[in-house]
Length: 131
Image 1 (cartoon, rainbow, N blue to C red):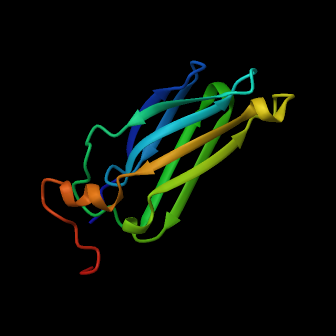
Image 2: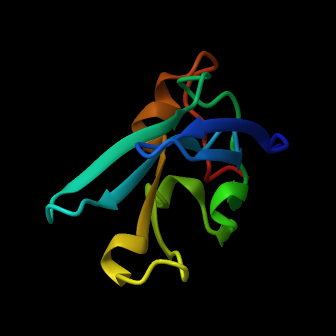
C-alpha cells in the first residue's frame, strides 16, 4: 500500500524557496533549470529524497506539487501508471511577470527512483505484477 505524500523544502540558484509535496517511494530528486542572461543554463538540485530507496510500492498514482510563494507559483502534476514505467517527469513553468520569455522559463525535472532502485530496497524487490 502506498504511503502518504511528504513535505520538504528547497532553494534554487536564485534563492527562491520551494515547498515540495512528494510521494516518498517514487521521487528521488527535483532539479531546477534556469536560463542565464549569458545564454547558458544553470541547473540545481533543490531536493533529494532522504530515504535514498523506496520502502514500499508507491502505488499507481504519482502526484507532485511544487510551490514558491515568492514567485507566485504553484505547479502540480499527477500521473496514473505503474511506477516501474515512469522514470522522469519534466515540467516547464513561465513567470508571466518576466518580459523576456526565455528568462522567465523554469524547467523542473522530477526524477523517480526507477526499477533498479526498487530492487535495492531493504525489503527486497517490489513485485508490481502480483498486485
